[in-house]
View (tube, rainbow, N blue to C red):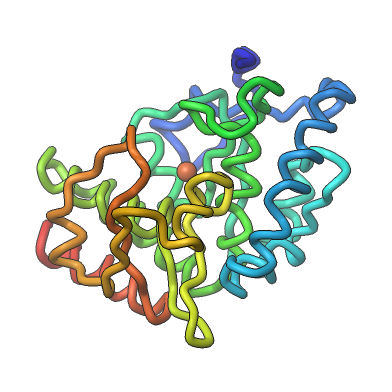
Length: 258
Ligand SMILES: [Fe+2]
């Protein structure tokens, strides 16, 4: 797989402290034609399944933020379309962030977005998120007003938590919503979590109801107590009825854990 490009921090954002050292500029002109073609291939491979099985908020968000099939996204352009809708930005960062920096950015409606793209020998999976996972997988959902409010509130709650146990529980809420969330829509189960949106294998496991998969109705208590094994296909997922449900769940979790 390709190594994340090391770039110097160049951006100053007055409202960010912990995240400041990780902010970079996206050097869009430096992407090679091979990297653009990897993006094209990844998007082209995912869209037929997503057109059938992604929730409407994701598909509408994809159009609203102006993602294109034929070239890697320019994060400044994505943010220019997203910001007026929900106040969110797709903010370039140098790589994996420590949790305080990550939560600080979510609380400021700035989604930490990696700028590197996987190589052709890692098309299905990368251990660390790349621009495909982050932008294709996550950012379209940030155009949905309630999801946008939920994610900001989630960041604020986590930024205020001191207990490692409370943070671990909130990590499970993130996992079963933002990363692996599914929603009831028009009598079907549709995907909205970025781990399902961006992974053909994980999404196929859900839409074909793979062996051992259980889809439960969303329940905050169960979510906070379900241990996650990131090395396996997900055996349990939680289906929501609407995004209001996870916004309320974040508020409920706040009142229990803080
Ligand atoms: Fe993710």
